[in-house]
Image (cartoon, rainbow, N blue to C red; front, top):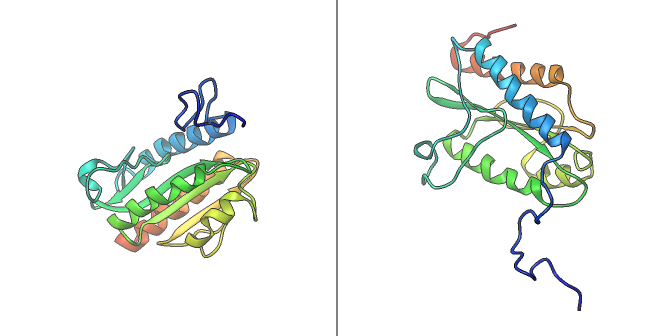
Length: 183
């Protein structure tokens, strides 16, 4: 009988000597955080952003939610989430997406939940597309007040991400205040 991952003290998670984050994942995370800071300044008079949702904001107060591109609020109402996900052709990392989405939709059912998906698994017919398809009517387009997932096997430029993020935040401003913050 061959050794299993469950032998020799291993109980799941990232195995000793390996990492879950590669260069593409680090780059996506860094872009989300960098663009969050740029947009925080641009929209400071209209929208606020938090790095994560705090326990007193989350129903039940026990779960955590820290989207890569922040949690965005207008008048203390959660209006947008920006998340980055990197996935190979195997694995189940993308399945964790549902927890954060569920938490955010409990807070505001019409939140704009945006996912930037990269890697081999971020193609039509691959793991991200298959796993997220029940929660998305279509991919690679902004769906106001719904779930939007943009798939790019080779990643996004910061300009592509910034354009999408501005479109979303301007939509939120139009919806909640009847004005946008065009840059």
